[in-house]
Image (cartoon, rainbow, N blue to C red; front, side, top):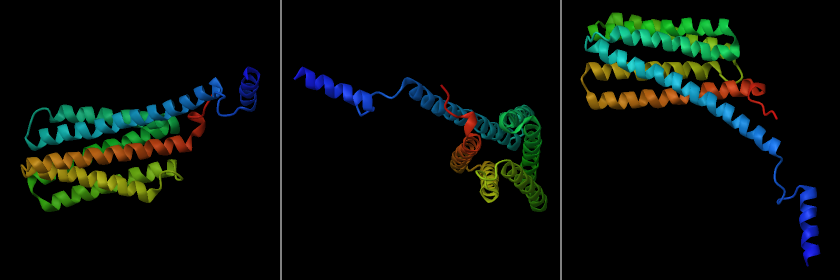
Length: 216
């Protein structure tokens, strides 16, 4: 009986059957790929979460004429540099700087939208909002050209415009002193930015499989 059992186990090991463990190198390679992709997703989520957190801090300060509005804007501008640098790791420093420039314009124009909304001047608000949307399309165009197969232009335009729309609702709720609506609006901003962040990270992983490839 012992001979038969021993022979069976030996055969399974030789043929690589169910009882044979996967090679350690394969396990290590698979783990590396998962870790690298997961790290990118976490890093991107942190960057884009900072984006909406500091935008909210600015909105609150600007609407209530608080002195920390400038500090919030300065932190936001630093966040755009961080996002540009993160993208630049894959597309080059020049591309990262171009994205930073577009994102800083996005923040500056967001400030104009808040100011116009606060003033109650509908014409000024529409003008500022139109300019903001044009910048959003420019950002979508830039990213789509960098990764057309995984970041389709129409999808990115929709994502950027929704980011603007949810942020505008947040401003409006704050101005209206609708505090429950303000909380719901920020929840919508936050949920959307996580979805957008994950989509961007997924696109990078798919475009640069060699950077996330398994290695021994």
